[in-house]
Amino acid sequence: MRNVWTAPTTSSAEQKRAAERRDVAIPARLTWKDQHGTTRFASVITRNISEFGVYVECHSPVSIPLYRLVQFQLERDVRDAEGLPQSLRHGRALSALYRVTPPASSGLGQGLALRLMFDPRRQAIAPAITQTRATA
Image (cartoon, rainbow, N blue to C red; front, side):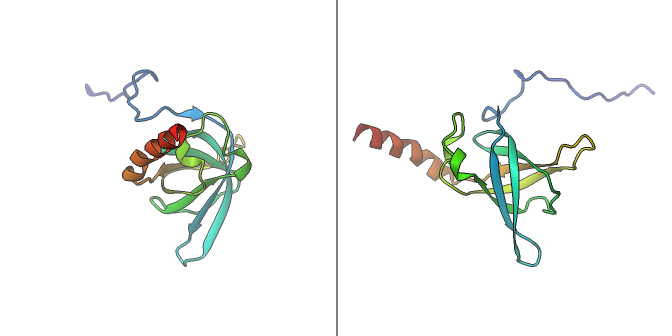
């Protein structure tokens, strides 16, 4: 066999990301509706966070289908922690579940990757409002 496929290796400097990820361990909460319309909740711990996404770990497995919309919310007492994106400091953030990692036998919980869903117009206006308030 002449064709051997290998995964390309890239260093972290070569990765093309829209925003930098920061490793953080902050308590948060997920809220969603199941297939029957019942509201469900899960307490999670963030593992890394960026302006556009967050990876969380849930110690008790949850059954959320891929691409389900969920509300992500940091616990109130940690919203002002240093290094958090401004978009997550104001309460709930609509997000979509795009990857699920099963619990590991080493004791790590179930992993959930969330894509934060923000209105681009709101994102463009927020810095302008903050700057206006600072100069007023």
